Image (cartoon, rainbow, N blue to C red; front, side, top):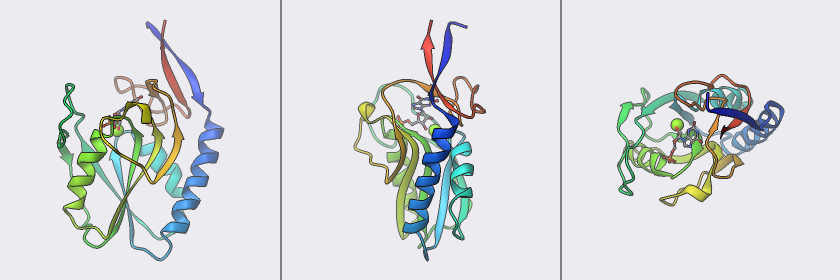
Length: 174
Ligand code: XMP
Ligand code: MG
């Protein structure tokens, strides 16, 4: 291998921050009709640990979208590979994502989900790389802001590997 993985956010720091975000969500969505929509596959670890700490009656659903290709700035760049199963009409929908990078994925996903007429639509992302934005995208709930590094672990992959790491690491070229 011509790279190594250096620890960036420890398991302890992840879990502590995730509990804080969970309590914010719990407070904000009390008494609401919450459905959390995870984006596959990157959000699975985060979604599981986060929602175990949200003590509310909520529903879970999943979407899978293709990554965009090429350097276009145009919108509507992702393809829907798996739609949600539930009816989102009138629901308070919270998208659960692993990382906001350029913002293009979430811009498309939000536009797509808005057409289902939810009562509200917000974004919760474990990581945020604001320096890489191509479109304006603000997540209402963010775990950690990180610098412009390629990261893996805790759901995030490099060629489908490392999703099972309990921490976030950065890929460092040798
Ligand atoms: P955009 O640019 O649309 O990207 O905001 C969001 C998606 O890009 C992937 N992504 C990463 N995946 N390490 C990864 O494993 C990273 O550092 C990284 N940055 C972006 C990720 O799939 C995310 O959902
Ligand atoms: Mg993703």
